[in-house]
Length: 285
Image (cartoon, rainbow, N blue to C red; front, side):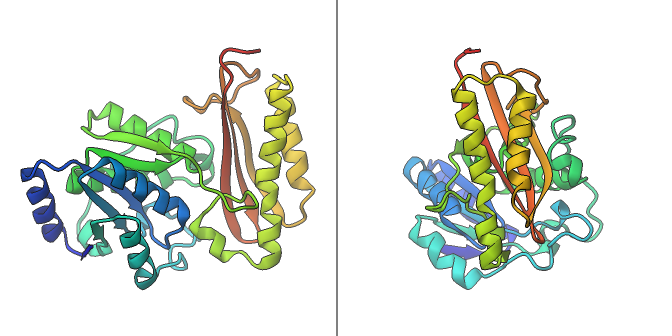
């Protein structure tokens, strides 16, 4: 595996791969890798001739008083994990390489970025789409792999690719969970043992929503209320949002139809965690 820090070096590798007719699979990350990231890399390995993973903690997607400075970083830990998962090139640029002095160009997707995490983290998705657009331009992937845990991010990237006619296939991959159901996240490292236990309320509340929907509940407000009530039973949990939405437009719904996403953002202590449940009901209800 090659570890690359500079744009020009990466361009040389990509150019050579293209000359050899290799398909390129890309896994963008902010590092501090876990099984969720590694599952994306393994999927990319099985479908492409060259696998590129990026590790870049992107300052543009962090707001004031968010955890940019504290976000976990450990390349010596991450590199062997990436290599074992089949990554060929680990691209680890510096901030000055991605955003040189005088940088003034941004990519922004409207409407679906104004809700959910976009409502509580203004500017976050502009940072996400800007860095992903830049990385797509550098890596020139045939396929890019994103986890469904970050469901809004995935939908925003899909919309950007669709609207800008970017020649890349976005491959959604299932959320990877710990054995007790907690969705894997680099931010889980922030949790104390008591907070880690409290965080299980996210998955438990989603399972309650799933049970209710499968039992025939179609009133979205009742689902919201049930989920929120369960989360409030946990003293360390503070709700940012509980959403029952369309899953594609991300608009809140009143009645559950063909498809539904129940999405959560919850603070456990100082750590903000997200999770979601997506269901295709085949037109039932």
